[in-house]
Length: 374
Ligand code: NDP
Ligand code: GDR
View 1 (cartoon, rainbow, N blue to C red):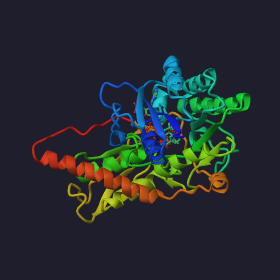
View 2 (view 1 turned 45 degrees about the vertical axis):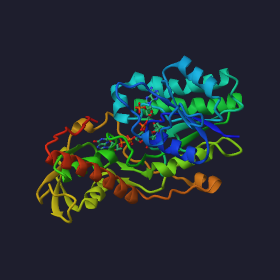
View 3 (view 1 turned 30 degrees about the vertical axis):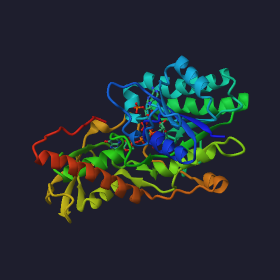
View 4 (view 1 turned 60 degrees about the vertical axis):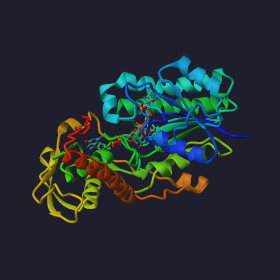
């Protein structure tokens, strides 16, 4: 029997990798996609299947986590064996700007899905994965953080995800649903949204290397994170739903680096050696050496990075480090891609894009570089 999965957030970073993964496993994959004024399917265009084909195994449904009737109708139609709830307003800084919306989508949206599953009588058939987050630990109470570490969320996003975490546990305990939380630490890839810190760095420096931008403006570069690769992490999301019992798992690498480290690695991938000078909001990074041909627009002395306090958060999560022992011992999961390898892949991807852009520019097509302030 072909298994059927429903993914909310299929157009996002994780949704796109998970859809690929499940299609490879022979699943019929249904995804919920928001209506947008422009195409928002760039991450899944390569796996798109024409719905007119009888044997299409990827199907998209318009929907939104804020719309109960829409979610109920899609669930009734699809009758999924597995639901992966990856849809969310997922940007921590933006959640301070739009706290109520974030709560509606990230917290109540999760409840809407769980309740629709129950209402439709699918609670004993459909397995449920909730995209929980290391942001739950926030102001950390223990290092490294594991499944039993107390939570202390530090943003509207994290507080909304705390509700989603507990409502998932509650539906498991109250109704015997197979519902799990994956407490995932930061994971990145060339498909990472452009305003998350790693992608902002790899894309920004690649653009600077090609003369498309001049300087990167950053927030707290002393922040420490446990970064893994999204491809490794979606494998684990699936594994969690294949177990005999529903449990919650921390997914992390167990290694921690600073944002500053990530900047240094990215610059090195472009042949740039940086020197950090000054302190706090006056800190800058200047190029001291240029090697190779990847950064023709950069000379020694170029200030490629400045601090802009607008990127500081009202409450910061300074440090996160996960302990993935349970995932390793119970599920045999270990991450295969290191943070440095991932950084190299991201820089190579963004350099390619920047080179294409610079080439168009050199031929008179001066397209603006898309930018966003976060
Ligand atoms: P992305 O931001 O890349 O993707 C989020 C997805 O959710 C997009 O498909 C987006 O649609 C969709 N979405 C946003 N709002 C709504 C809504 N109102 N209704 C339906 N769908 C919506 O996130 P990631 O792929 O990185 O993360 C996936 C999930 O995992 C998220 O829930 C995130 O909070 C969580 N998480 C992520 C971690 C990470 O490091 N990446 C770590 C821990 C948890 P659109 O494309 O139209 O914007
Ligand atoms: P995070 O990811 O908040 O951990 O949430 P992000 O990459 O946005 O920030 C990581 C750290 O970098 C610092 N930082 C900056 N961040 C951004 N975006 N822009 C900057 O200019 C900048 N300068 C410094 C941040 O302050 C922070 O400390 C991500 C999201 O994917 C969540 O959905 C997910 O739940 C968590 O990871 C785990």
